[in-house]
Image (tube, rainbow, N blue to C red; front, side, top):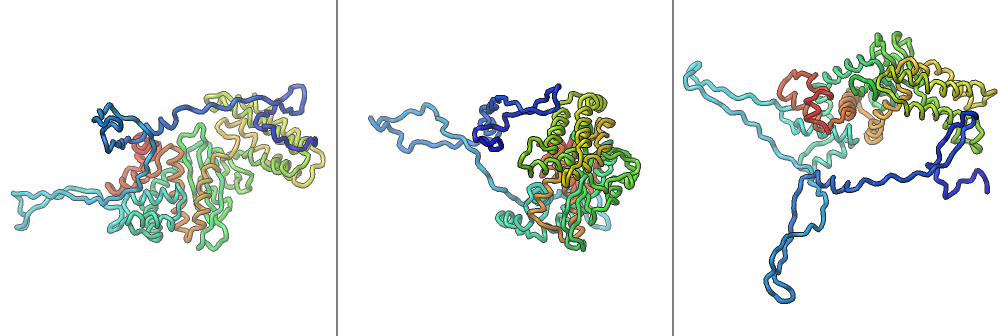
Length: 460
């Protein structure tokens, strides 16, 4: 049998890599794994959580089919349980204000009338109310449904809203009601000690360029004051945008990839880390293209980095200081072994040489994890926040104007930050819009996603 041929009966998931302390080679050992037991009664629990409605069927003929005597009812039998969908329902809310008349005051010989205060419409003489705008924005920026597809949804509900009306409402809504909250989230983010940062392309027709960018900054999953994902639109990938987003006096640490724009030239007081997954990716691409993989230097490099990630994922700590100490004790020897190995490869060729050069160039940044316990090992968190916007981009393709692109950034920020804080996106947007119908200048700090009142009203 060819040793390179795969077996139809071999379960690769049942293999783990083990390290022999007396040998530098990595061995594979097969272990048996029992499949996880499926949780029982999941469907029953889900159905029990829904509002209940009984549907009862009765006999048409209530006499015995044999003796034709009357039958006596002794109860009922449950035959089946199933969820039922009710399509979106709409109603017209008529807002009235009670009017009072003073019997004693007659200014200028007329009647004195006093009218109760009422919330103002979100937009005057428009179909777009707080809930309608929240629904449009949720469909677009959370569920990735373009405006032209939403037209059919509204038409089925007998509400004529075309894509142009929806686009105008979204742009005005972002500018009037969400931009101040967006700016407040920017201020909160700049107070964080560590942030992730990355960029993703986006096409804007009136920018005059074939490619513009969303710059995305988010807080780490661990040790952050608050969970925030911030999107910033810029027509360029220039490193100048980094200081525009974080400000030039930002003194925290930035976890990023190897792009040259992330430099202390833009943020002189900052410390830069580097994503180890981006470094590993170049070696993995090499391994995928190899026919004989076991003895290849790239394979050994990938295995050495796998040990680093495995060790990092199994650290035990409560505070950044404890994590830093654990990394120095357990992770650093493994990362040292990786760099010792790749730096010792003689005469690497082509893509392997480039992968090694990239890893060595970023070595000092990678080793910042042993100085800053809050600094993550990879930039995966921010890429996870970017991913929903790429799905929307595939469905909507482009923005027509720079104003539209900036509105996209505002909505992406509010929606993704709401999701990071486990909020229902529709409820959260509706709550913000409703606040502006009651006051022209609501207290925005009360509507930040981590506010207890917001969590109570909009939590999933």
